[in-house]
Amino acid sequence: MRRVVVVAAAATGVSLFAGAAVLLTGEDAPEAARTARTAPSPGDPLTPGEISRAGTIATGPSQEHMKAGRVELLYVERDDDKAEDDRRAEAYLYDYADDSLIVRTVDLGDNKIVRETRGKGVQPPPSRREETTAAELLLAHPKLGRGVRRAYANAAGRELRSAADLGLRGLIYSQPGGPCATHRCVRLFVRLPDGKHLDTSRIVIDLSAKKVHTLEW
Amino acid sequence: MFLQLALAVFVAAAGSVTPLASGAASAERPCGSPYLVDQELPSGARWQLCWEMRTIEGLTLNRVTYVPKGSPAVSVLRSAALAQIHVPYDSGEPRYHDIGSLGSAAIPLTDADCPGGERRKQVVCVTTRPRGHAYLKDGFGDPDLRRSKQGRELVVLSAYQVGWYTYIAEFVFGDDGSITPRVGATGSLAGTTTAPKHGWPIGVGSRHFEESHSHNVFWRMDFDIQGASRDVVEQYDFAGNKTKKRALKRTVLRRETKAVNQRMRWWRVVDPKVRNTDRHPVSWEINNSDSAQYRGPSDEAFTRADLYVTQYRSCERLATYNVAPRCGKSVDQYAGRERVKDPVIWVNVGYHHVARDEDADPMPVHWQGFRITPRDVTANNPH
Ligand SMILES: [Cu+2]
Image (cartoon, rainbow over all chains, first blue to last red; front, top):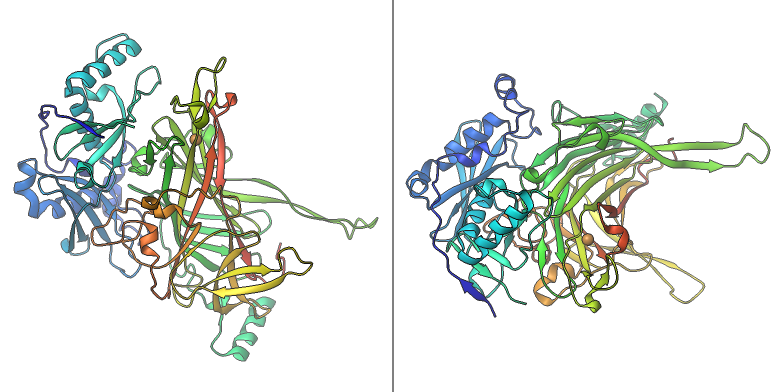
């Protein structure tokens, strides 16, 4: 039923701790200094400082794999387990080589990893960085990539420079039986400058295999 | 003052029962500015809560406390958030699970998006608005006996851009103690063409049949009435269909449950030891009668119930595509046979969207949600 189209892997450089900075908005930046001085209340969201600290600590054991582009930090979320009084963060990391999700819980009081869980077939939402990677894979696809470039040129009146020109939103796609049962696969919504969305409902980007799958129904 | 005294007397008489005054609510400041919402409405009702824009769930409200006029605070919800928006199309495909990282999909709001309110960190609006009549009772010619009041509600909302859709997620807190979580879908139609039997003709003539689809919205509500202990979930039915009489039937849901909607059926979360001054246990009633009750195929078992009761587990966060290793994957798996000591309620509200000409463009918002109403939180109407 499913036609699998193999495309060349796009070269995606991996920089350390990139995920930690993703959620910082312009408004948050000047606040970082302020919140560093006053301790947050127990129910406050993580401060930008806490997010980057948790990211640094949580990625410590994965340095080698991250340098090799095998593991990426997706994002850091506050741990809101109500049985815990300590201020904690959960860092989500994905290992694309063995297709497992790693969640490391960091105690922000003593700056330690206090828990690690690992599992296959568990796919938290794509990170911003993964959305870009998925778009790069789509653009690298001979036929579909050409289609996206043509649609962009028609809508914008100029050539597409990079994936950053596209409005992107990714959702996890998982299908029992197919490669996306175990791989990390995303569906992309692609918005063009004229406000229209490409019909991408049949396109699935497999971040583990660095392939584009076309669904048929 | 009188009320405090009455409570003190009551405590002495009732022994182990916890009066509202001694609750853990607002003991210390649970969150700081700009995350704290503390809103007194004109009637004297007051709501306190903390908000957080989580990366995955988006707007999440924590430590929600209701303070009826003249009464002590009573904590209601430890946490409330969206848990999934499942969007299956009528031809069978595609079937989206729209919770991506909602936190990063949150749209910066303008003042026009938040009339009369306050924008917090650009992505959350905290405002109040009229909700129509709070009550109306004629004086039969005597103006002194006539009672009429307009109600008001606190709204905490965020909006997310997911593909062509914009979802507005509101949590509405009435000055009558009610809570209404709801989601409005707006933005644009997908533009997906389908066979006439799966769609509706939009645009000129009948060439383009826009595909019908469902929005099955799930919320996760962790009720903690005056703390996590003792809360019990009950289901109420009224027997006697097609007869003159109706008889109340209470089912205590002591174990995890997958419950479906029925005419007249409702549920409540009750703490039997927390009492109002009439000595009735304090509870919140849940009513999900507005759902289209979508039922999907067997590999979408999460669609096959309208309300789930599960024992609290911190790793159980989303209704489908859960994000934690070594944990259940969807709400139908969480709802096993475990004894429920600290209930979490998952509510599934479906809306079947059959497009119409008016939907283009921008698409008028269509709402879906459910109601939570206080039952015996106060001994009478305090407002
Ligand atoms: Cu719709």
